[in-house]
Length: 417
Image 1 (tube, rainbow, N blue to C red):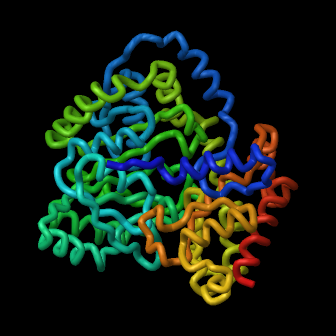
Image 2: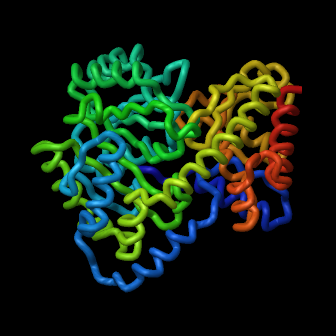
Image 3: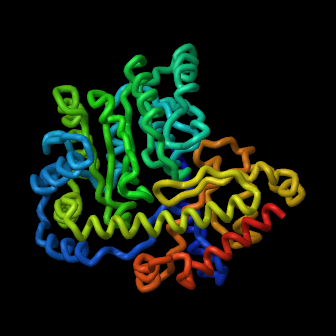
């Protein structure tokens, strides 16, 4: 059982305390899409305020139909009986841990809540390195050996988690890697949990995207939500798609049973927001495109700053993260007492006012000089600043965005000096 706060939430609270003390902090340590709530979504929330009664546990019919259509338009034919809604994808992922048998295989690094959730459900967790070209999936070259080693040690790995696009690397696994992963899942009888909450945050919205649910639909569960793509983290709206057919319906029934005792139902006003947003009306599609353009521009700028400072870093193509590795500057950093990800993150915060999430919190080697930078926190502190960044033809030319990027570049450069 975990006994400490999630590290990204703890860092967010530390930044708030430091700012209250007068410190100037550039916050790169929290995976929030820092944009105002879109006006049509706010109107739907107001209109749904009358929905104050308990609703169906899985979701209201209009919201379920909308979510099914959402998946269908993304190449996954889905009926309302194949989906359910929850208060964010996080509790839906936890419910999966509670109802799916077996231990969990995770890419290293990966989002910092996957492992604690699995352990809270009594599962063992086995980390697998990510491929050289991307994050988000276990390296297919290393996965079978990890499975065999876990079984020899008495484990029972039966679930593999992937994130498409990836948090923390901001990259997307290509079709070839996904197909290889699916073949291994079929050979080893694994359930794939495909966390696709960043699917609508591809920097090139029409870029190729292959979900494991297209390759091996009978063994893939897909999760999504509105926290990242539409900046509704505080509203907590998540969705889940089970495999079509009898096996999936059984899984959905067990998930609904867990939900009935954990959260009862997604709140009525949020059901109305979900019914509207998952319907992909034109104004939502335009908002998604504008957000993807902004996320991509700023992520590429932070990536360029890391490379200029001497780090290695995979180029970001989705979500709003970069994951630099300052191993090439190890000798210079060691002279400042920086020897791994904990001391690197501490040094950046204390000496340069840059808050990042240290790689060891994501399952990475504590001795590695890696961290996650959430670039979506650089759009401004007010609704007006954030909307200006979103609307700008060149977000990097917006003064407050440019100022923040300068701070980031200067801090990274001092690491490599």
